[in-house]
Image (cartoon, rainbow over all chains, first blue to last red; front, side, top):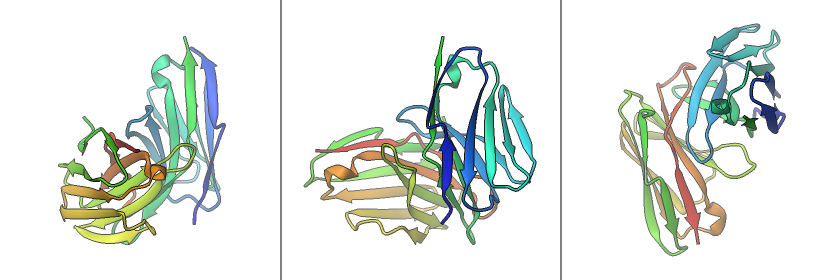
Length: 113
Length: 113
């Protein structure tokens, strides 16, 4: 089975600082998802990457999948308190009619004003 | 509004009780999922339904009983639970096939006393 390791497990940054979260897979990634979760709530979809070297941005969040498709990074520029939450990476794809996604344990981000 | 609605948001039940969690989506998705999220663990996939048919049951104890009467509704029936079953239960839906990812509900926080 595919395992995802996220680092760091938790992060505290000052508002306005940049930060990076990493997600490393034990196997080739065919679909890599980034989700954000506020404590005790559901996951909100951020981005999905498929191709080696692919990079996507949404507002101040940029995600990249490396060329070998085994590692992804999520970068937040000029962090704000609204960025606080748990960031989870997920790997998966078509399992013959439905999608099956395996998740990392998550990175807890706190942004101090 | 995420498009996937879960009720109740919070549930406290005794070990001898019987209760049900409900999930509803009107996104036109045909696959629905139950995940369990416990502290310091990755999300655990419990059940998958594809076009109302159960396609995956990841060795979940029989005290959890899923039901999918149609592609828009998913239930998780609970009976004689254990305290270690206390967790956040998340429902998700997706299109069948492809790699578009999931839409999650806000979850039900279950506490077994």
